[in-house]
Length: 225
Image (tube, rainbow, N blue to C red; front, top):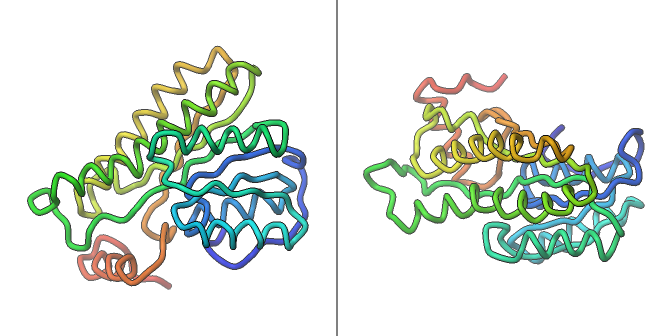
């Protein structure tokens, strides 16, 4: 799965399902949205940038897929619930909830330099978005006795890539997934966490590219081939 380019229809196995994707307009979230649409899944697209949401929805619809958009940060109260309600109202079902929402830590940030508000922003963007989506979708899944939640953690939670707020938030996502899986197992709801590494190119933009280049210089990340 790549982090760009459009999507093409085809495939089998997920056709007719309905998914909500938080953070669906760039990086891994955009690739996930296109991949699901290409498998015949109806997608609720979410992102902070309203134009990016509209563009992603238009791209999916233009290829013959089904999508609607919900603008806002999934870390804010009510946004994940709005996504779930959009899925039920527009497509009449909800089967899959995926959280790819997040933001980059300020360039060069360390545990000594990050401001408290910046640290809270990391927790809200990564961990609270996962919590809100898991809770909103989980309630629907428990009622119907089925459903799958996928949260995006990161190998950064091991502390090897620098920063402080980002790895702390991603570590929280990992723990939340384990706790939620235990809570919901008896209701036949699956909860998984995916932990990409830096080679997965989670995002885009000059700051992100500079961060990756810094990891290369420090010997933490192998040079691209």
